[in-house]
Length: 335
Image (tube, rainbow, N blue to C red; front, side, top):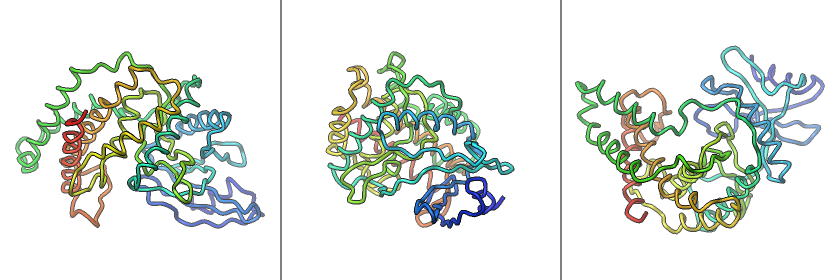
C-alpha cells in the first residue's frame, strides 16, 4: 500500500492533501501531511513491525485523559471508518495530530532543564488518577534483569571469538556494578505509576524560542512502571553532556539539579521514597543501556548504524557502551 492509498483511508477523495518526509526516526517512517482546505498538518507514520498496533489503544486512552486534564499532547486521528490504524501487510500505519515546535539532541541550558522537569511533573500529576489497564507493553522494555541475563549468555556464547577478547572486561564490569547496586536498593515497594518510559530529550517538544515545553512526543512506550526508572531514563539522557557518542563523558550536575527542581515543583503526588529512588534509577538505566549495547556489539543486529561516525555496528555499540559505563561512574562519584 503506497502513501496515497493510506491517505484515502483518512480523507475523502475530494480533499486535497500533500505530504513530505519528516524527522529522522530510526524505527518508523514519518511523514508530515498537509490538508489544504483545513490549513492544518498531521503526522503519518508507517510503523515498524516490532511495535504491535495494540499500542494505539494505550495512546488513545492516555491522550484523552491528558486532554481532559488540559495537558497538550498529540492525539490519535481515526480513519474514515473509525479505526485507530491501517493494516498494510506486515506493517501498519497511524496518524496523529501535529504540534509545531522544536526538539534538541541535548539540553542547551539549565533553564531548559527546569522547564523539561516542570512539564514532566505536570504530565505525571495529570495521569496520577488514571487507572487504565494497558493493552500492550513492549516486551522486556527497561527490564534490566533481562538485559543482564542476555549479556551473561552472550559473553558465554562468544568466548572463542575475537569480539570476546575486546569486550570481556567491559561486559564483566557492567555485570559487577549491577550486582553492587541491586543489593543496596529495593524498588519493589515504590508506587506503580503511568509513565512515558522513553524520555530522551529529543522526545521533549519545546516552543519556537525554546523557553517552554509544549508536550512529550513518541508515546509508544507508555506503561506502568516506577518513578526511579522513569526519572532515571530522563536524567541519564538530559545530564550526559554530548550524548551517547561523545568523546568526553561528563555528568552535568547543574542540569540534574535544575531538572529535579522543575519536576518537584509540579509532581504533587510524589512520595519521599520516590524522591530518594531517583539516583538509583539513573544508575540502573545507564548500566542497562551498557549491557544492551555490549550485547549488540556482539550481535550487530539491532541498533541503526550512524555511518557518519562509525564504520560498523560493533564499533558504534562498543563506544556507546563504554560511554554509558563511564557516565555511570561519573554520576556515582556524586550520588
